[in-house]
Image (cartoon, rainbow, N blue to C red; front, top):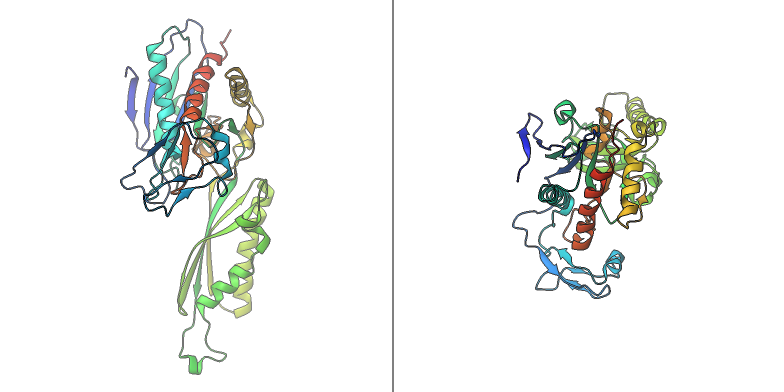
Length: 365
């Protein structure tokens, strides 16, 4: 394509540079996308193209008609009247999270190389693994990347701009039971599976993902397994506020201590580890990257839709590693499953936006 210094480091990322073609010095801007997809069938993806969608019809995904994109179930479809949609065939996810971002960045680079009259400073791009399991940016080499500011192209619908994410932790809880024959169980048996159920029920019911929205935090049970002898629960813990985040971790740890005190033994073993933090804590001191993309959106006819993302991106960790990295839209809807789809027009708008951003990076005196 004409990119420079294409390289891969121990972190698994592929970096590449597009040198400046402008006589004036500008900050170096980076664009980042990830190539892994969610934990849903991604074998043999067969995308379907629905041209000039009318905004109200049901889209059959599979030939048997078992899976459909129905506006009554997915009202986001009504936004896309007259547009070209790319969908799944109902048997896999689409992978637009974040192959859409990869495509948009590649298209942007190709366009800039083909149009040298568009002046820009140094650009660096990164394509990485393991974002969906939250470990992709653990060893991201910001020094080698070299950007002064960057953007993950990993958001959803048109106009999304996010510079606040959850603080995130994971917890594993192991329960040691005392298993005896049920005929002799009275005052002797400690059923680890029952203990795990009681533990989960002791967490606030109103603080589960399905009960929360906006800036609400939550505890989410992600995995469970057990017998009377031994049981395990896995949780993710999320909150936007750092103090509340720490309180949540303390609450679940104290709950484990209470169970141990109640039974007079170390029946509950808990391990909590942090995954990522709210990038807003970094960006609040200098919103230059946010203001830059807001202005660029307005120039290309996009209304910015700014809200805290109830999740995280590679930008969460990269921001704390020293490169402020907000998240901008890539286009996918209904991500992580068979009902995922993306608008071709939204993807084209993302390319327009990236081209505008590199032109708007301020020159240095």
